[in-house]
Amino acid sequence: MLTTIKLQEEINRLKKEKDVCILAHAYQTHDILEVADYIGDSFGLSQQAVSAPQKTILMCGVRFMAETAKILSPEKKVLLSHSMAGCPMAEQLTLNELRKLKKQYPDCAVVAYINTTAELKTLCDVCVTSASALKIVKNLPQKDILFIPDCNLGSWIEGKVQGKNFHFIKGGCPVHMQITKEDVENARKNHPDALVLVHPECIKEVTDMADYAGSTTGILAYVEKSDAKQFVIGTDNSIVAHLQFSYPDKEFYPLSKECVCKDMRLTTLVDVYNCIKGTGGEEIILPDDILINAKKSIDAMMSYE
Image (cartoon, rainbow, N blue to C red; front, top):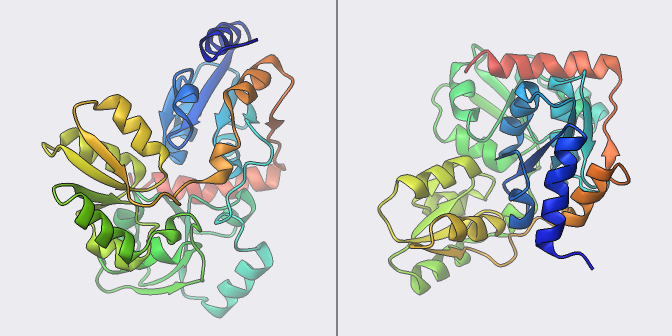
């Protein structure tokens, strides 16, 4: 019988032998993070795929992340750790629906959250991450913005930008949207000395009540720099566990027990092991036209950095 430690040892041996770089999103479980070469948010991992010397990339995350890695590293073999690991938000808008929206709002810059399919990115002007969205939207020359698919992140940006007209669809992360105003009120009552840190994919009522709203990377950085000793975390509850490992002298509490991404949880350490062996996962293959056209919106994003 394999134990966690034995599995990790075998994964570490095999990834060197087979020239595989393991990328793990921060929402993965801690046993997977411990064997990853790089840990981070979705776009940051794709950038690591570009600079990694390995010829094979294993993305422990969800499909749009693996697609983005493939777009940026088309010459490399990119594997998704679990073929069923999708993203409900990324799949909320179809290509035909976006074409209709572009006709409806012809003067708008189409701004796509990175949490979109490669196919949708081909029709967008610029991609953004939760960390870069505010800066990029502020600097866009267009005054009219069609922001897809997350209306919560979009409205959070709208509240911080002057002189722009925003249009949204009714999209967003179904996991973050489960966090409520009442959850924040209960957290304040139960942990009065704690700071409340939330992701801007949460609804406006929640972000308005938080001490800090920002990307997963931003939340982690906030904790690192803060002198506070207690925090309530309003994003995937895996972050609570990771912060407990990183800062054992501080206390962390989930804002909602419901904030768990089932797609992220599909990947197990055994899945990673099977991928490394060559008996699991799914290779991401994208047509040349999608690789080329989707990259334009990503290149546009990078031009603002």
